[in-house]
Structures are given as structure tokens and as C-alpha cells.
Amino acid sequence: MLRTERLLQRLGEIGQSLERTGGALLLLGVGSVGVETARLDEYSDLDFFVIAKPGEKSRYLDRLDWLEDTFPLAYAFKNSDAGYKILFEDGIFGEYAIFEERELANAAYPEGRVVWKDPAYQNLAIAKSAIPIPGLKAESLDFPLNEALTNLYVGLGRFARGERLSAARFIQGYAIDRILSVLHLLEPEVDYYPDPFGNERRLEKRFPRFATIVGDMMQGYDRVPESALRILAFLEEAYPVNPRMCEEIRRLAERV
Picture 1 (tube, helix red, strand yellow):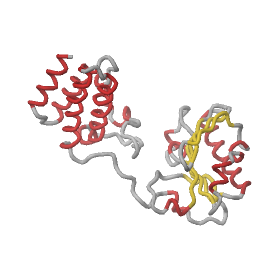
Picture 2 (cartoon, one colour; picture 1 turned 135 degrees about the horizontal axis):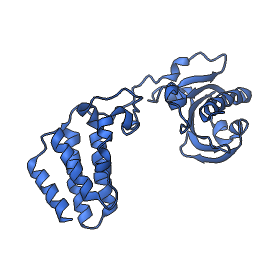
Picture 3 (cartoon, one colour; picture 1 turned 120 degrees about the vertical axis):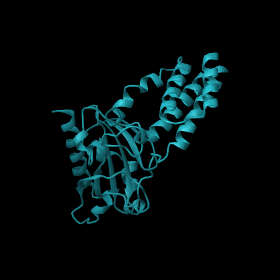
Picture 4 (cartoon, one colour; picture 1 turned 180 degrees about the vertical axis):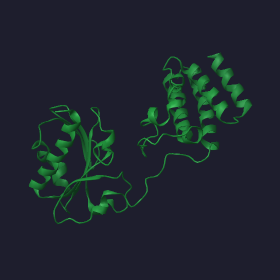
């Protein structure tokens, strides 16, 4: 059986297990096992939400027998107050959260696909958050690209004093993140499952032109100045950045 088929089968089996335990109302698949099954592949994880009956949430957090009933667990790590990251013995990795219905009333969360429900439960609208997820995309180039410019300057200063890890984060991390937040303003975006929680997700398909050059902007721990200069060149092409700041950034990069 293909891994993609096993993922969906395992999710269905989890729904059957929830039905047997009697303390749950709804099982929602999210991400690639949710409403985006068209992008499901052999590297996908098993991400899901369980809506528990009032007073039953702790039962599903404190005891994992309802998961073990579907397949033995090799690893379980409680990564939040609401859920776990898990690995089944057959290599399927998953992440899940348990909620009571009232907890989702004022929460923003990704839309889920109903995998199983208690026959008496009717509130299927809960599968989609009533509150929009805060966007990570900016609507103007001004703040993000000027912030990226200053990230380059600060990062090169830290590289010069020997703080290479911090420098790498400022230049190859923070500055890149700022660019990603406005990339939709600089290049036509291919509509391929954008993730509201991470602009870097599926970037290679969403922004194919930028994907061909971003590697030169992230050359690694020992090539921070080279990365900074490539990012600077991109900023200069995209936006009327301050010439004096550009001069100082180049001076620092050449010095180190």
C-alpha cells in the first residue's frame, strides 16, 4: 500500500477508535490530509484535530490508547497543552491537538476536513474558523524591504566581531523572511496551496523565479558576506533603497 493511502487509512482508523471510546465529537484532518489532499505525497504527515466532548479532553491527552488501538506508537512527545507529536512504528509521523468546542469559538485555525463525527453532532461549521488567520504578507514594500536592508547592516557588523551565527540569522534568516512577506508584490504568485503560517512553504512552486536565485542569498555559515551582497543586489533591483545604506553595507561586506 502506498504511504499516501496508509495516511488516509490511518486517519480513518483513528476516527473509528474515537467512536469506540465514546468521548469525542469530531475528527478533522488538516493540511495535506485535510482539504488539500491534492498535494498529499509520501513525505506528508498526519495532522489532525479532535473535538472532544465537554470534560473529555484530558482523557485523550493523558491516555494514548485510542491511538495505540490503530497502530503501535514508537514515539510520543507532548509539544503543547493541547496535543502531541507522534511517530507510529510503521514510520507514519503525525501532529495533533485536542479541543473542546468552546475553545475554538475565538480561535483562528486552518480549515479541516471532516473525517469522522458523532452521529448526533451537527456543528460541522466548526471545521472552518470563524476568525481569519492573521496574514504574514505585507501590502507595501516600504517597511519589509527597509527592515531587510537594516538586517544586512546589523548582521555584517556581528559577523565582523565574530558573531557568525547571529549574523547568519540576521542575513539569511530575518532579511529573507522580510523579502518573502512581499514576494507576491514582486513576482506573480502561482496559486499552489499557500500556507498562512509560513511564507516559505511551497515557495519553489509558488514563486519559481525567486526560487532560482534564493540559494545565492543563503550560502551558509561561512559565506554570510557573500549572501548579504546578493540580497542587497536583489533589494536594489526591487526597490529604491537608500544609496548611503547600500554603500555602508558593501563597505562592511568587503571589510569582513
